[in-house]
Length: 285
Ligand code: NDP
Image (cartoon, rainbow, N blue to C red):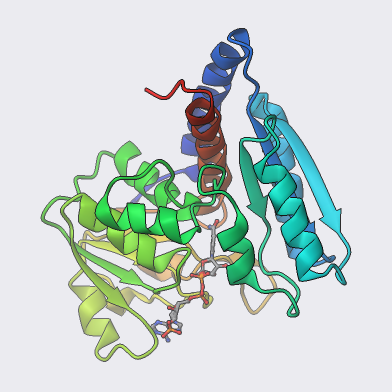
């Protein structure tokens, strides 16, 4: 039976640490501030934005929400980002993705100041992550690493397999594992022998976006299995990319969905915003 790595528990600890440090910053006259931009009325985005605002309030940050109508123009959005880039009270800027089709996501990401880019999506921050010299890590992969560390798992020399190569999860995830001396294989939809490759993994990260995609026959006995996926199963119930019931008996450690990687993402966003506030006020350690 696998040990369950609880994202609920670890994220609560991260948020408590951020809260404590936020109090120290406030004593020095600095209150971290996060601006969250949402364009249109996508219900999932609305839930994410509300959760981010709630987390800010909990750790003692100021949060500003900019809810823009779906028909907002590229120019209007870039104008707002420019204002926020120059607003002293705002340390972190986040534009909730996906954006409505007529808006250019790349241009929007590029417009956010790399110093306020707490999602770590800006090409300059992506480059810094690549060379291992960074201030911010992308929240979801950083959250996965936090879970690995919390469980006391040493990545060095392990066979690590990441299923998925998106810019926000799979690619940076593989880089973070590589930085910790894992031997990393990245799989995607064109990968041949996926089952075979996954079965060789000591550490398997699933970021596919397909409900219960990873089955027991893709997992080595005693593997560490980290499930990034957020999907709905055939009954509309929240589930991950891993078939938990099948895989759990084979794994040594596993993250559940919900309550695994999900809560870590927002906790790491709080950590990045705190770091941004410190950097912008010359307080970084
Ligand atoms: P994307 O759709 O951007 O990427 C999915 C990746 O999976 C792609 O690289 C794709 O390959 C690969 N893939 C798809 N089908 C297969 C297959 N049959 N075999 C092998 N690889 C395959 O998704 P994201 O990276 O954005 O998200 C992945 C999952 O994580 C989603 O469920 C998402 O909801 C969840 N998520 C969770 C977060 C959290 O906070 N916990 C945050 C972000 C995402 P190819 O590149 O070839 O198309």
